[in-house]
Image (cartoon, rainbow, N blue to C red; front, side, top):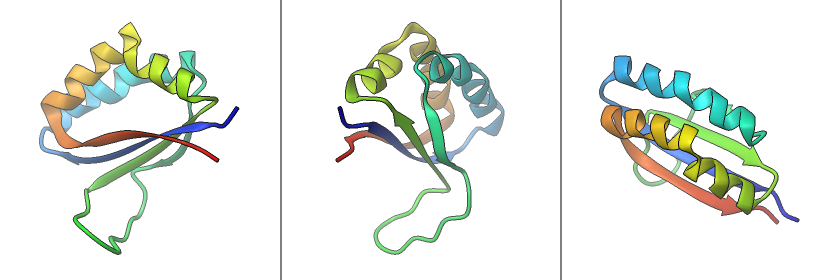
Length: 95
């Protein structure tokens, strides 16, 4: 079964509220065994518009990644992210 990846690109406009998102995301990611591959490190935009913060999370499968996204724990956290930032979150299945 191929792994799956959340790829998030975010511009934060309310850092204090975004901290609430970070704090509340932990339990959901732990519950679904997400592995952080990249989070907020150095970036260089090679093409197209960039975002200030970029995150890549690995999950065991698409099903696990979707279950995490739709879990009560992440739904609660997601509301903080949507209030505090603008960006994109996509789910990609590995090869």
